[in-house]
Image 1 (cartoon, rainbow, N blue to C red):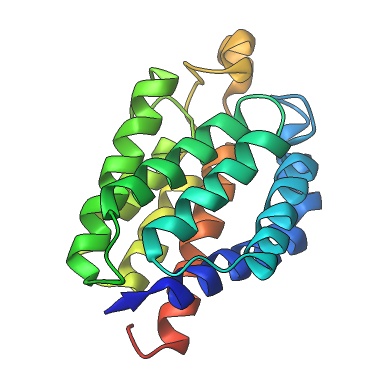
Image 2: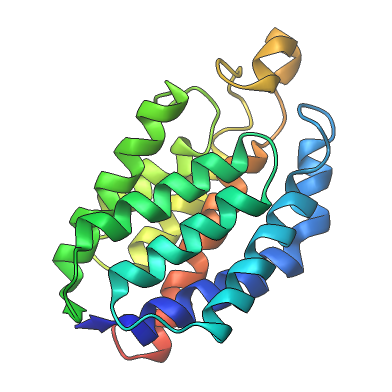
Length: 203
């Protein structure tokens, strides 16, 4: 079972991963975006970690809703609303339970990913964060490690794609040959999730 402390540690680990990879995310964003993806997410997840340390909600759903709210209020551009929606909708799907099963958590994350797709009007293959999120959620019922691997492979697979959504789509064919920064940061979330699960004996 996963409790509020598990979710808090996941997001704290995600903040550490984003902080470590911020420069790389911005480098990936430079040729096809606004060159601010890493710094934006770094600011947002730092705020998430601080909020969770100050106010520790007692249910998994409340942890995710608080984190989502922080991302929406601190991250500019499209990333804040998209990541905020992912976490808030996942949290709402979990409801008020003090603990949730792994299968229930996977189902809730799928609700969050579907909300991201609806908000952005995107689908897998459009060279967006969904190219990592969708395969990760598909693999999550197998294991946290499988979800991490699927997210990583999904992010790498964006390199030969032509962007069809977001600022990168304005570049047309020139977007080909660049790994999508959003898919890359999404893979970091699942990397942090798998590490948290391994630390808690859930892998």
